[in-house]
Length: 147
Length: 234
Image 1 (tube, one colour):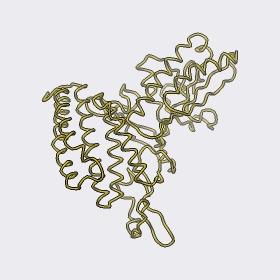
Image 2 (spheres, chains in turn red, green):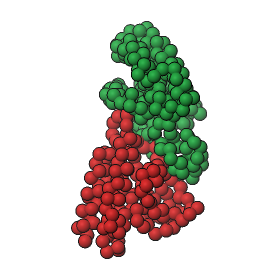
Image 3 (cartoon, one colour):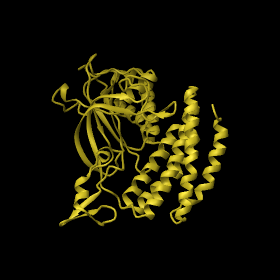
């Protein structure tokens, strides 16, 4: 496995897996990767070339998004990059719930690397698709407060 | 192409307006059956126009006619739902209502001609909440090792098609090719509302989860059928 760099999509159990063979991506990861590719958002994959992490598909109505890891270099050098990525994700979530009635819950984690490059902070979001847009500001605030 | 989207919309609205006043539970059974029959040729028209648009590689028109097709299916399923309720076939009535909700949702995902359906979706959801007790739903958790795109057959995620988006008259889906069931959970909001507990035991007898009528043990034991393995459990 590669160390998470830049902007990376992390498996669900990245922090507590026993090894690479235990890792499981959220089933939405492939869709988000396609959308990133189409919107020219460069994702640094943690998988080495040819390596594949299985996905976990839970047939619940909630949209569970893969955790998004952002390094301090992106947050200092190109903060708009995170904003664009989150807009793409937010727009997908809105489409996902189109025509659906009842609860429309999104679960999403953003992991922001600390300013000194050591350690990170996790933002856990559970709510509607609209609220996803606010994460950019929250991530920026978490990073600035850390500095 | 056989018809333009605008021309077809006129014809579609005309047929729908002639039947929609019967889309209320208390309307006469025979009028609802006639409405269902009146929608059959409309469904055929939608499909023929969609096929013509697909043949012409007209993505927008194919998606629009697919949306018209889904809207027609939603209405037909709604009528089937009322008819089943009147016949006291409650489990089937539930399935038809959920199919109507899915068809309306697919229409909205497919094209802007169905953008106005949100209140219709809300109405179907209200019927679900008012007429049925909240079922115990199930959700299966799968570990997926390989899946493919329903549009192009490539490994899902490697092509540019996005699950739930329309492409030349069909919605993209991710087809699991290699997966293992990891768990079955009881959930309050499942992806598929047909995946639910259908019976419960009370002492020596089994009862239908909706009607509470006693059901023969053999019919409980015979479930799930092959169909139910896909759509429902228990």
